[in-house]
Length: 132
Image 1 (cartoon, rainbow, N blue to C red):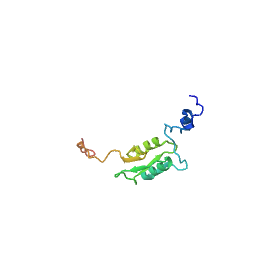
Image 2 (cartoon, rainbow, N blue to C red; image 1 turned 30 degrees about the vertical axis):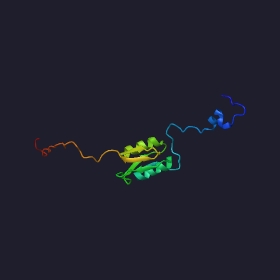
Image 3 (cartoon, helix red, strand yellow; image 1 turned 90 degrees about the vertical axis):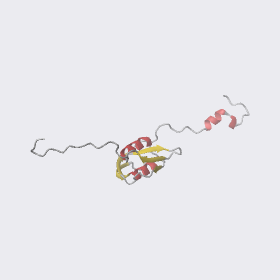
Image 4 (cartoon, helix red, strand yellow; image 1 turned 60 degrees about the vertical axis):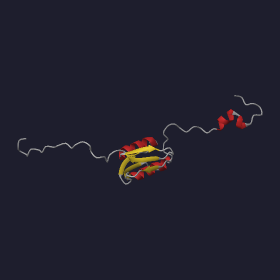
């Protein structure tokens, strides 16, 4: 649409399209802080979530019951946030959910429930040298 003579810039559709910021990327963004190491060997899981938070500019909230001192070994260098969270959550047995405000809840994935099946009855082994 051509600009009409005398039309103020805030009413010009072409000017407003040029002034609009670009849309955010739709793909996983690699770490913002590349100076942070993202390979962990036997480190507390809270430390790994803290490093991911610093590298990607996000916030993690560990729910009650999540042991932040539990040790994990994960190699997350060069991975996007979604991929890194998937690896860490599987390794630690966590379920990570994104909140509406952009932060992430970290909860226990599964486990801790009582076993509902009856245990298997085992038979004792025959003595050595004896017949079964």
